[in-house]
Length: 106
Image (cartoon, rainbow, N blue to C red; front, side, top):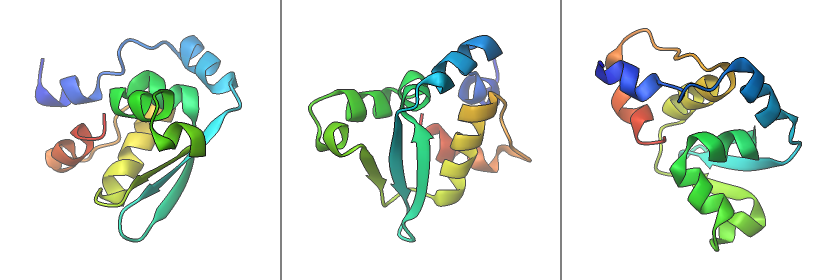
């Protein structure tokens, strides 16, 4: 498996399972970068695909109560690619340039 396939593999989530993850109306706010770009994302979809977000939002951290995660040091462009992948199940890369940045978000 190539590095891109490893990073972009959606864990075999079928479209029907993705729809079930989206039926939950619970959302969280994610603020990214020094520009404080704000995203509202389905909580179940986010925690299903990311151990980091699962720990932050399901654990005893403040984020689980506030439903807000701040990623001030992260790149908003890389996070946008992550969000596109979350909702589409397909990577949106033109090159391998975004792989190191987005790999850290999963």
